[in-house]
Image 1 (tube, rainbow, N blue to C red):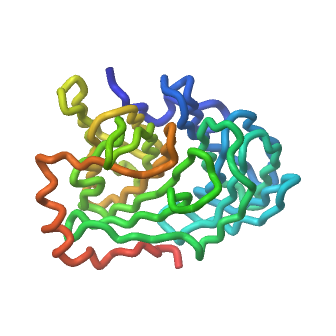
Image 2 (tube, rainbow, N blue to C red):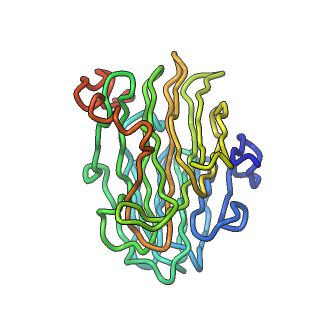
Length: 281
């Protein structure tokens, strides 16, 4: 069974993507991508899920009883880091965009969630990971280190054209001293018409081993198993939004022992000079 969901297969018109725990066949993680026209308003409420609102393109005003915030957003996901808003369960809110664009709403089933908060772009943790052709940038939109949320973890990864990311492969599907179960969604955006990349997920017992071609708007669901690498084809930068949630809000992972040796070598190799990505500035 494939865990790959090509662009369009999870659409909920007029929106390009809607996947919740029911559609994914698991317990916690979800992702909605909304498409708003200039001046359009949307009223939303997630009764049993905490949410993070992440502009993918365009600017937004978020109105709710706990807070009202203007999200400067960005022109596209390969530009500057965006600001965002977090809500706990059951908070009604309205989204309005003067520019039009797409906005991601990352969700996690929770008992109550945390207090509403605005997270400005400048507060975002940025990590340049790996080295050489395995260099990539990780933006902590709602990392485990941010206190308040109950289960939701959200990051975005930028991989320059021709580079590998999510390598060496890792997993987080069982309890252990260095591991916590987390369901994960990969939402891919590829820069350039006709662009593509590759993604691999596999289990130690080989019951699942899949390498797929990913294109702009594709989703890969990861209920278990090692994942990586993600490979950006030459000429086409790759972006992916990772939404993670599980019974405990922690990011502890297990690297595939067969490839763990490469970590030290990558860390001693210079980071790709194309990082950090700030193309639209």
